[in-house]
Length: 180
Image (cartoon, rainbow, N blue to C red):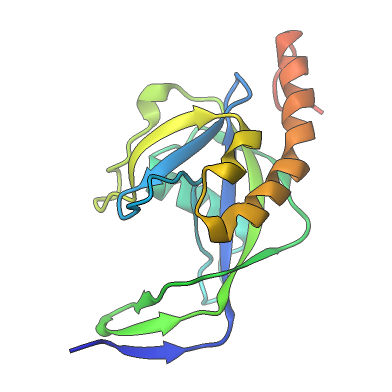
């Protein structure tokens, strides 16, 4: 029997994390449920109860999906970015019911990873979201994500790319990466 689907007609509030390392590369993972072999940056829902702001959600999602806690907020993208979401989402506590959102609206955060690679643990919170990860150039990611996210990733690349390049150059000059 097919699950009951409730169409909300709304955009789900979400946060995306563009995590950059000292080499100027961005963390990307392959989702365990993705048969296309695409990559994506960590992302997830913002608590609907209203207690969580985008920066708090970004820290939580990064920790839950990657195990990473050694990250510092560098920049928050001003506009929310929307994309159409072509799948249904299980309703919490009701496995027989699915929510159909029109799409997701995302607030993107640029964060700097200052920890060690050994900190990354894709199974930290039990159910694994990513099968593998890689550090990739930000400008390469729009071509590597699922098609419905490509426009958003191109906007993230345009917004955060100059900051990453400028700060990477400063880091090469032995200044701390996150200094303005």
